[in-house]
Image 1: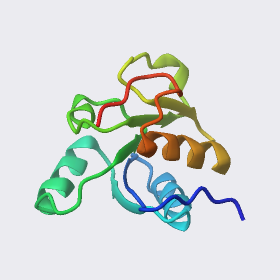
Image 2: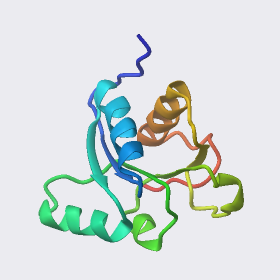
Image 3: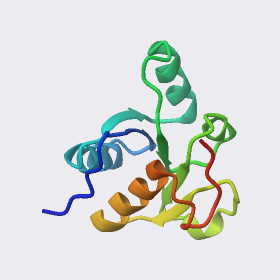
Length: 125
């Protein structure tokens, strides 16, 4: 079984317009030991975080959208889309092209939560 489990497990915020994609990404990350929060849009994500009363805060964001609000979290943002070559933003930790392999997804998320900046893009926090 492919696993990159590192303790302690981290919280990943998935922002993806497609429910099927949210479910697949969530399942993969949860099976790898991460806690996952899901939202359809950046606005929904911000409401979700506010509703949690700052009790749960993501260590990394995995999104099919590049929105300013996601960068304001000061956490690594991984852009995951079929259109990743058209997006140019130096603040991104990494860009993944859908469909993404399980190995690439898990290793990129693990690098982001571990603070490894070698993937390109910038990472704060």
